[in-house]
Length: 405
Image (cartoon, rainbow, N blue to C red; front, side, top):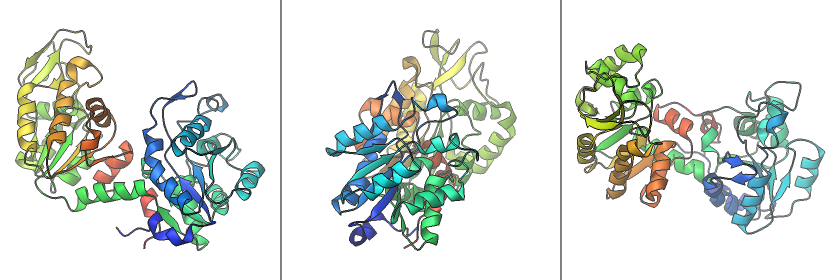
């Protein structure tokens, strides 16, 4: 996919007002940022723009804004302050994202300046026209586009959504004959996830976990013909085990997806690899009595993690892999007694040599951070929902809207 990248515009940046859709949707409580990884991930694109004389005007959403009461907790002001610390230079925060103060602040910017506008989702409550941001109101996209000369989308986390601050701005910019490019973070996601889906080096192993088969149906169907193995753990494994006729006790499963699970198993043949043993407990609690059982679970117990034999089987398959995509935990990772399966998978990925390893957000990312293996992983996606959509083979609006080269 030959998309216009911010580096293609190097000679056009000086003196230009560059609108950048970033993903600053970070956890904030009482004004304190809990995890600044998404801010750090945006730095290469921001620095490239300002180092080449551009004026960076940053837009992002934060959380789900439902009423005026949410605005105090969901302001981007703490993010602007943290960005200033990371860039080691002043960052101007504007407590609005539309109107005279925004326009005057941008007009007064000097080359290399950085401005952060207020949470774009405030537009979903601050008007009489409904959810202008999340419903991609064209007039809002046109207004934001009018503030700049160039648009750069670097927010993969919202690439699966068509909002005014990504698709709306991009379409308005292109209509006005102005460039809409991808930032470095978006480029990296396209490169790694795109190659994994379209042109993986084999053996290609997909690892899927999480609670529900229904969340991963599209991924499984899309990757069956492309993967050499699909390793399945987490709550979704019990729907497959039940479809095979195994006893699953009180384990989480989707009864209405049993026929689909059977179809997928038939379609995949021996590509789908299920747990051969499980860590089972009497209830969903870290303190509940638990033990390792086989692939049949006693009636009074529920499976909460893959067992040691399954870990060994998965690691044996992974040791020869050249491309690995991992999305979703192998068990109830949030509880220490049921985290080992997920952590062992993470350790196995970190040990791989000459392999492209990709982690698709959520608890998988949390496991990588907990283990300290992030530097050993080729790519950790910044967008859980977007990465799933990409792995399903869907076109993402936030990527499609970027200008082609």
